[in-house]
Length: 406
Length: 233
Image (cartoon, rainbow over the protein chains, first blue to last red):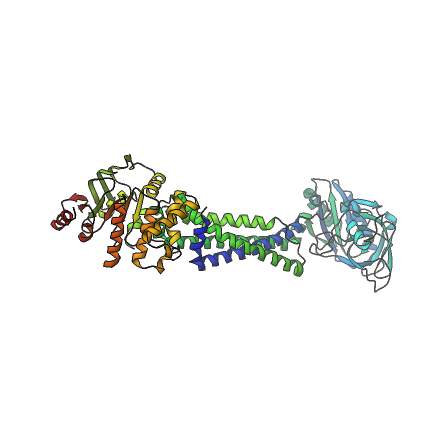
């Protein structure tokens, strides 16, 4: 490959090549960092919520008659008994929220009582009964589940908290970072001073907010709430969900005419909605990267075509002097290789620099080592593919053009 | 060395058929200096393109050193052009982005010589045309005569079997033209065959044999051409 004379000839007409090299550098910088963002978003979208999503759905019941606390307790117990009695239903629970719902409760937890505790950590709170773990498909890795007699009833806005709780492993590690043994039996404090005895640790269960940095920090407490709005989460046996959704909706609707059954949704629908922003971001960035790559490719085609037109006579002279058609193609390919190498080197440096800024500013993950070489190879291939057409056209220029009057 | 038999070249468009060469036959022996003259549109350039393998012929045969080259493919034609033929063009045809050294280097790289061999040949040819000191100059920094000398050096660097010169003094003033023609005569004296295409009869008398082309065929030519040829013999 005759890089020397190609390089020296390029130096005599720098402007076009410099612009293309800069375009390649900018494209690579954006491509690499967009990929880093896309990868992070894709990782978010692909995270497990902890639920048996394929077999779980949720619905809400809103009673509109006059609120009666005792009647409400009876209604909730009856609803849960009704749902749990349907063949194909594995488990059901009344809870304030569930993973990916994007709305729920959070409280600060701390290892010492007091309002100014420096070690307080935010955690999502789910109110459940003894069916909570099975309904949420939570795997207990330490301790025990709630017993029915631990489940208390509270009125809405009552800030009295149950004395027991089950936490996720992620929360346990954050709230007891130095604890190497079991955290079961330890006490944490909620609402500044209310002690909660940890009776179990589950492998994972996400908070309702997928964009929250502490999404894996969750605590379940044994409590039901007297409220005329109840959210039921229902886990079916595998394959029963779709058939049971309308059946249970109708069952509940028919059991009481004083309410509305609403928000009947599968966890797949909830997941889709929860990650709509991430999915849109991935699509937009993919489009931007593709658009930039196409524009860069077109820029290379444009420059190469211009160079072929500008150097038609020169190409003819080279052919007359003995250049074969492949030699002419190689000339333009080499030229593009040099421009790409310069652009990609600058792009590599800019990519790392921008990534460092983004890691600092937006807490992004640093670039994986392989992203830059992959981007370089991809853009190199785009460049070579883009220049192939004009180079082939150049190779078809007749050597006889050398004898025509200039 | 060069033997064309009944060579024809026809250019066709949808509506027009132009016979640029008609059953053109010519033999050029080793060491000859032949001029090809004729009026504008007579077929001189077409002859040069065919002889230099820049274009394919339509009919007839063309042998170079006893080898029929009319049936060669593009790659083989490029190789023959590179190894056996040196071109000198009217407008010099140097590559403006390359300096003198790199311009002469172009055909040598296609030939596949190593760097040392290329350097040796380039320096030798530049010395022969008296431009060693201009090795790193670009064409735009040279006079017309110097540019043509560089083109001659480029043509000679590959040590070709013959030189094809297309109006080699067409863009030069009289002094520079004489100097270039002296150089061509010197090259011919050293054994290199030269075929020079020109429309100027006064230049043709520097050749040892004159061919006059009219309407794509060899013709007797005008009286002054015969006179000039006889005078130079």
